[in-house]
Image (cartoon, rainbow, N blue to C red; front, side, top):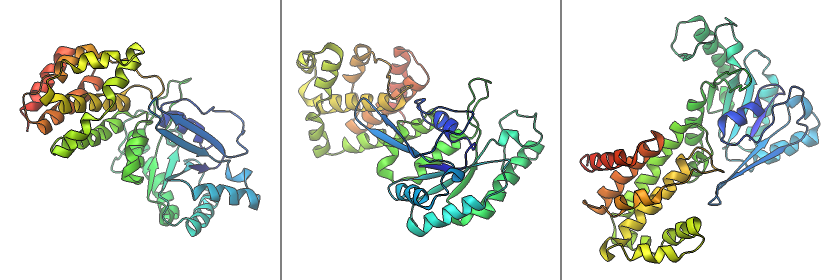
Length: 338
């Protein structure tokens, strides 16, 4: 859930932080009610984001109560405060009311538009806003620390960010740290789902480690391997690519019976990793499964070692745009690292 004053940059934050451009950035205030943004992956995982009106538009007690009611259903709240506006009483009042009703809701305060701080014309990131000694770094530090002092009792973190501005060519700054903070703030069971929708690749790559660990652990037990045999992934991909599950039966005949759980597990892991690391959640790039097939059948080590090496090699393959021959090399390399 997003809260803050009009003009703080909430809509542009949505477009910078998440993969789908579902929010419109307007020059004039237009958000006079809670807006519901909904993302969904082809596999049915979903994310809902509530963008609330600016404080000055929700002074009516009944509408303020409605916004607080939404907060009781949220997993995380982001409060946006522009760097050049030092008036934080409305923010403090809102967070005080919020914590009275939803004491355990994680809150991250974002200091937006820090590129406008003095020296105004200087914007040459990266900046070390915590320890740096340049004038801009000190200005960002002071603006962030000021909010931490006034709002710190109501929030978990205060972070400075700059959102992307495609029309001017301005690149985002601080979004990588914010993305990681989002994943750390929500419940572990929901972290992977959220990661699929984040634009920041480093955050999604970090989440990929959870997928790899899951399959590596599953392949250490007889029960886990047996469960993989029941996975419909082969039929699913066959139907997805040809419109019929018939190809799945042909491919299954090529897999040695004793290797069937491992091959199915590697295939399922590949699909899950691709869904996480693809450029957009709603328009996935096609996967050349034919090129991957020989590696699916190559299992020279124990199931858990093979799964671990396969997962890490795939992460490099899809994040570094490697050729299939390089994927083979990285798979062999990781097999030697355990």
